[in-house]
Amino acid sequence: MIATLTVSRHSDVPVYRQIVSQVTLMIEMGLLTDGERLPGSRLLASNLGINRNTVAHAYGELRELGLIEPRGRNGMVVVGGRDARTSSEARNRAREILATATRECLRLGLTASEIRDLVGGLAAWEAEQALDVVFVECNAERAEYFAAELTTRLGVPVQPLLLGAAAPAEPPDLVLTTFFHLAEVRGRLRGPSTDVVAIVAAPHLQTLVQIAQVPKDRTVGVLYSTTDQATAIRDSLAQAGVTNIEVLSGADDLRGADLVVVPSEMPELARSLEGRVRVIEFGNVLDAASVRMAAEVIRDLQLAKAVA
Image (tube, rainbow, N blue to C red; front, side, top):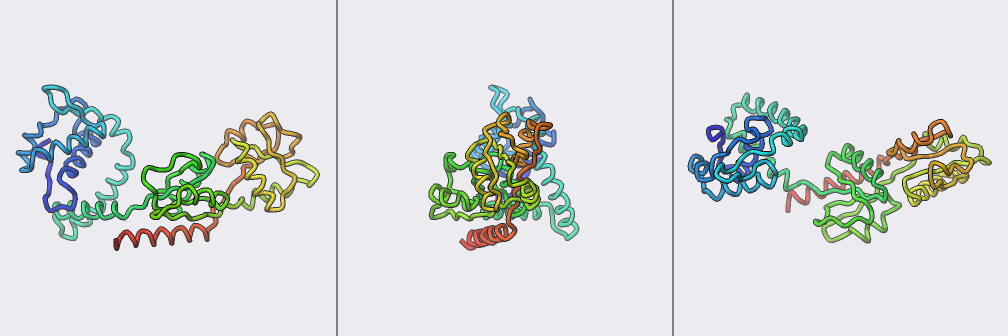
């Protein structure tokens, strides 16, 4: 292992972090396996020409990651190899991307050390520019669904946050929510360093067309995981001109409904009604203009971080 570890004092990445990254990679690739002993901090420090405390710092980080642990006289031993390899799909994909970029850099004439320093510097810069973005909803399934959709549309990670849950320890840079919850979210999460932006989540046109086909003297039921969420959907449909709506308390409470609306992100509700009543999934669509506005806010925040 010692022969394959290298560090650069000229890199923007701290030396201890270089050790952590390289050892982690070796464990993920199976070059270091569970039970294998790592060199002592004094030996590794001497071989790399660095301070022993730097190696101790790196080993401490690897312990916190669950990748190594002390075993008495055996020193530090690898213990998290299996978990690291099974949970590294994203890192494998990243490795493929970096491998392609590295080959191109080599063709351009850069040396391995120059590429390593360049990647380390870019990674450090990008990490500093990264934004903490959350999407707030009162329903866990909708929060996760829209956060995933916004992650794809905006090109930045968006984390779901349940309305009423404890506020994040560190204030996020940007909070996204629907207009329905805007006032409450602003009251809870808006701060000097946190912007709050509302996204329009409108009923899918296909949903409205199917509901509109139900005769006015017949009943449309709305069944959601919570009564509050079902009431919100009923009110949303009422604004769209659909008034023959009943909020249902459960799968056994159909109230003579000819059609039951269930959330698209909870297919188990649809299955519970299968064969008993016509069911359609309530699909929400993120308004394109709202998403563009959020993207502009994100660009402004990234620009502000870059010049700070």
